[in-house]
Length: 428
Image 1 (cartoon, rainbow, N blue to C red):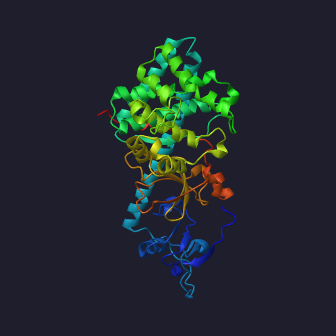
Image 2: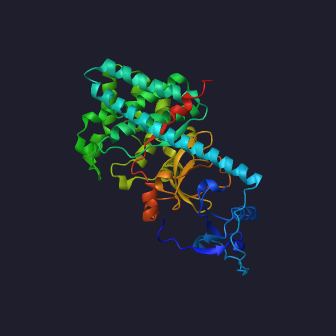
């Protein structure tokens, strides 16, 4: 429990709307979404009284008012704990069902992380075999993207989950996989054909392949590049396109490799192409690649939060991207993408864990609750908790130490789609 928390006990008869209360009983023994919350209506007061508690802890610092005056009453001896009403029993059973759903959600994220690691290892092997066994590498790449494509198309609304931090030094593989996952999702929402979505996936897997021709000291440099180093690094697009041509990759894939740093206004590189000169598929990848680069800069301390990255692209860089692609990308990830630290409308702090492309404004949020152990932390699906909404986005450094440790904000953002969710439904 947060040692800095200041609470005091009051009689349940002193409860009123606006008090922030802590219920010191098991989470399944009441019908509320959390053990601590602000009282919003008289029905909640009645429900608390029906729990049979004589006193309740309140937190003055988060309350809108003071408790009602205490009315001394004669001690009538032990009070029998009230039995829940039929309505309360219905709510408690609904909570039990929600608990089971939370367990399934946690299991889905764990399985998603396993699939993500497997895909990253496959991509690593593809990169290693690309020149020594090019046909095998291309076949493996095709199979990996085909599996992702089938998962993507199997469900109308694909869930995108935030993954755990990854091993240092493997960022190149996770970046390519991130861009593949998000670009394929975006392409699907833009109603591209299956063939084009697959070409985008393959192009994204190989979009940075030209960096193998650039010294690691430049590629992995965590502070400002010199002008000469910048010029050399920008050549990776042309180097990559040349490699792709030797490997016989499709023209659409080569275009993505060469043009993923081009911008709609002609300010990109290597050829300063405008939107009309860019490949239609490359326009999509340009948006996603920029987003992932903002979130995962060489020095993590310089990275933008997912919320900041989307806001920056929309407000400051809008002219750089195809408007339809940028607008749809923001719609898909929602205003608060996975990995964003948020404050909910009841002042609860949390971290967005996953979004559903069909409900981008109602993500699933891992919430900070000092009354619940970290390993049992609750993930609230805001599409089900309609009385709550995201009120603000925060930077991790704004969190108190105990909240930061509890939520464990990611230093690097990695995403993957919920293939188990998708594969559980018949394909339309």
